[in-house]
Length: 79
Image (cartoon, rainbow, N blue to C red; front, side, top):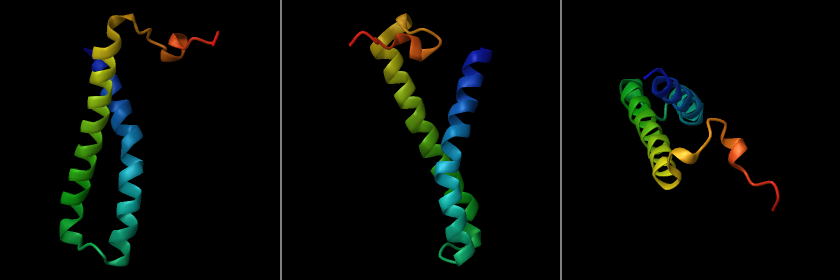
């Protein structure tokens, strides 16, 4: 469904800078060889996507369909 693709793309977009930018600084200094750069970036991105997917899945399993589309509306502000 389109909403699943949208959620996936948002997760990847949010996760990628956290991993890729520090890696690129290592590439420029020569710590990591250029031949391994693509492989390392792909593995780091895959790990990030899997972590985000697991958090989303367990959140859905814990809360079910009672979660509103805007998650901030689920917060109880009376506490």
